[in-house]
View 1 (cartoon, one colour):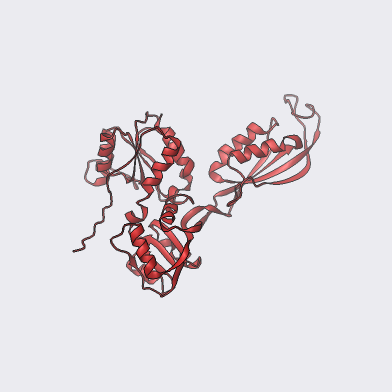
View 2 (cartoon, one colour):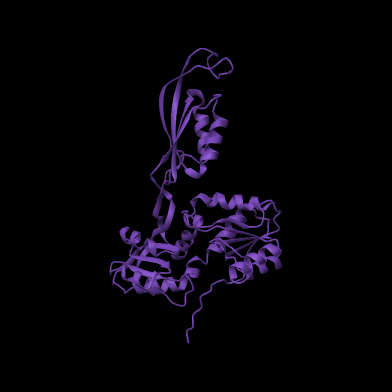
Length: 366
């Protein structure tokens, strides 16, 4: 098995096109053509994790956070980033990051937070626009079903919880092939009329190549007529944060106790208690203060995230409970998610969870 086989499965789950513009997900060091000896999954790719991978016989480290964000102008080991990269290269250990692209899928990082809280009725808190396309194509009646099936199998036709969605209308197509053609219907040099079905399907933009390939393979015509249109609609399955509901409402103190227990926290930073019941919960792993307004607009009773700045706590304005549980703490279960994604596809291959706790924040409790 090559490293590219591992990468292919990770990017089926979270395509690189879904990462934020500032991010640096993907293969950071190493070569996708290398034979993979084992995978070590972690939240952060630090020097200690690279050395652990070497000791455990793994030449690929899959991390949530990219160790390289900006450009590296020198590699002399003066900081932890340079030391990690040097150690990775010296030991022929590849590093792959799956960051905001895994944050931005419905069953990604935030889904793990929701699991710990037992949330139901989950949906993306801030869906992304510009992630959808519509495909129009024209097919003879007899072959319309085979083309639809091929498009559905390639991933087209999903709208929220519905699959195999399409719109079909009937009409008459005309074409005249040159003497160099071998038309499916009609004769070269003569205009032909064919009763056709116009098929319309929605697809995620990142699936365009595979959906178009499936169209060409299933369509009977020599030249396939189709249109691809970019949509500004929100993709309800892609975006930041997650919104869900508790099975039963809790008072604020009860919820904070559950939060502390579920995430094994030393403490929870939060805004003043409002004396309200907690039912609707918004969450975002990592630095999520940018979604506080979205959580409020969605009617959430509490917003659980991390890295909220002092003045941002004021933004709650006694309208919502903000709970900051810490960056590492909010994403700590992402490592288990990475292991499960890969073990589901490669059950007999060495996919390991790092034993290094990479949290750089410590608490002195006296």
